[in-house]
Amino acid sequence: MPEMLNTMVRIWQLQIAVFVNKLIFYTQRLPLIGRLITERAYAAVQAKRRSGVVAVVLILLGGLAESLLYFGVLLALPIALWTLDWAADERLDLFMHIYFCMSVLLAGVSSAKVLESNKMKYTAVRLMRIAPTRYMRAVLVNRYATFLVYQWIAMMMTAGSLGLSAQQALLLVGAVTMWRILCELLHLRLFRYSTIILVKKTGLVSLVMLVSLAAAYLPFTGLIDVPLFGAAVLGQPLLLVLLLLSGLAAGYILLLRTNYTDAVRAVTSFDDPLLNMERMLLDLQQKSVQTDRTDNSGVLPAQDKRGYAYLHSVFVKRHRGLVAAPFHKRLVIISIIGVLLALSSLFYKESLNVTQLERYVSFIILAMFQLTMGNQWCRALFRHCDLPLMRYSFYRKDALQHFRLRLRWLLGRNILIGGSLAAVLSVFILIVAEGRFHPILLPIWLLTLALAVIFTVHHLLLYYLLQPYTPDMTTGNPWFTLLNSLGSIGFLAAFLLRPTPWILAVTIASLTVVYLISAFPLVSRYSCSRFSLK
Image 1 (cartoon, one colour):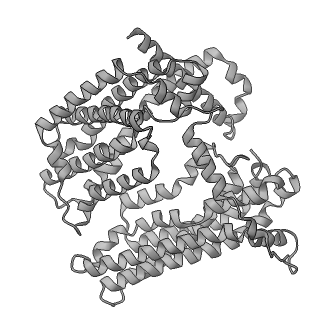
Image 2: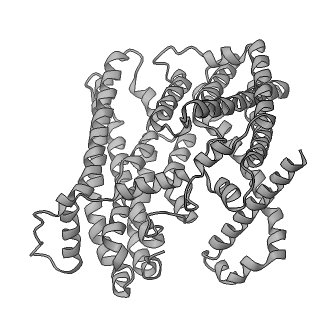
Image 3: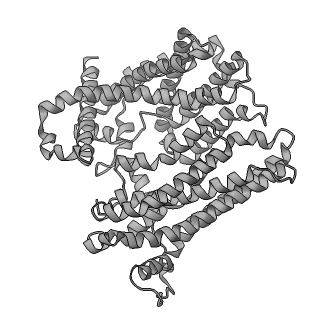
C-alpha cells in the first residue's frame, strides 16, 4: 500500500509538471500577457510549486466538469428539452436507460485504462522506470476512485430534479464503477489469451457506438417503439448487488493478483516517446494529404494566369485527386442521407409532420460543420504548397492575394455541398408535406448556404491567422482547437435556445456577412507575422 501511494504521488507530480509547463508555453503566446512571461519561468521552481496548487485544483475541477458535461449535455439536456409532456417516472426511466447504454454498453467496450496508450504511461514506465505493475495499480485506484466521486456528484446535480435520491445515485454509480473495473479485467484476460487489444479495434468499437447511441436516443423520436431496457436492468436490486460483488472481486484480482508488465509493454513498445494513438492519428493525417503520383501526369500549365493565380491553378491541377476525392465523398454521403430520409418519410409518413421537424433545424449547423471541406483543404495547402514558402517574407506579405484565390475556390465547392444538402432536405420536406410548398424551405436554403460560406471563411481564416500545423502535420495550438470548435458551440447554442427557422437563418446570414467582411483586413494586418512555420 505505501508503494502504491508513493507511485500515485509521483504520477500526480508528473501530471502537474506537464500541466504547468503547458500553461507557461501557451500563456507566452497570448497578446499583452505573453510578453511578461520569459523562458526563465520554466526554471522558477518555487513559483511552479505554488502554481502547482492551482494546477491540482484545475485538474480536479476539470474532472468534475467533464462528468457534469457528460450528464448534463448527453443525458439531462435532451430529456429537459424533448420530454416536457412525459410523466416524471417516464423521464427518470429514460435517464437511466441512456445512462445504461452510454456508461455500461458503450464504455464497457471502448474504455480500458490497462490497455490505453498515452504519453503519461510511456513517460512513467519507459523514461522514469516506474515498475509497470506498480504504475497500473496506482492508475486504476486513482482513476476509479475519482470516477466514483465525480459521477456521483454529477448525477446528483443533474438527476435530482427527476426524483433520484443521493442514495440511489450512489448505488447506480457504484454499480457502474464496479462494472467498469470488471471490464478492465475482461479486457486484460482477452489480451492475455488472444493478444487482441479490443479498444483498438476501431470497426468493432464504432459499431458498438452506433448501436448504443441509437438505442439510447431513438425513444426521443417516437418513430420506433424502443423499450427502455436500460432502466429495467438498472432497476433490479439483485443485479446491482451482483455487479458490486463482481467488481469488488475483479478489483481484488487487479490490485493484488495481476502482473501488468506484458500489457504495459505492449502498448508502450516504441523507440521514441510517441503514444500509439498519436502515431496512428499522425499516419492518418499524413495519408489524408498524400497525393497520387498519377495526379502529376498530363498537367498543363495555366498559360493565361500569372503570379499567385498561376501557382493556385497549378496546385489544383497537380493535386486534383487530393482535392476532388473529399468533395465527391461528401456528395456521396449527402446522397445516402437523402435516400435514408426519403425512406423514413415513406415508412413513417403518418407519424411525421413538418412542424415537428422544425425542432431539428439546428442540426444543419452540425451537418455543415462536418461536411464542409475547410480542414482537409488547409492541410493539403500546408503540406504541398505553403510548407516551403512560409519561410519567405514576401510570401507572407502577399498572404491576402492567395487568401482571396483560395477563398474563392473553396467557396465554390462548399456552396455546392450546401446546395446539395438543402436540395436533399427540400425533397424530404416536400414528401412529408405531400407535395405542398412549406414556408420552412426558404430559411433552410438560406441557413445552409450561409453556413457553407461562414465555415469556408472560418477554416481558411484560422489557417492564415494561427497556422497550427507543424512539418509532421500535428497541431498543438489550444487556441486553434478552441476556435475550431465554434461550429459545435454554435450548434449547442441553437439547440438550447431553439429559435425559429427564420430567426436562426437570418442570424447566421448576418454573422456570415460580418465575418466575410472582417476576414480581409484581419488577414492583411496579422498574417505577415502569424502565417509562419511552427
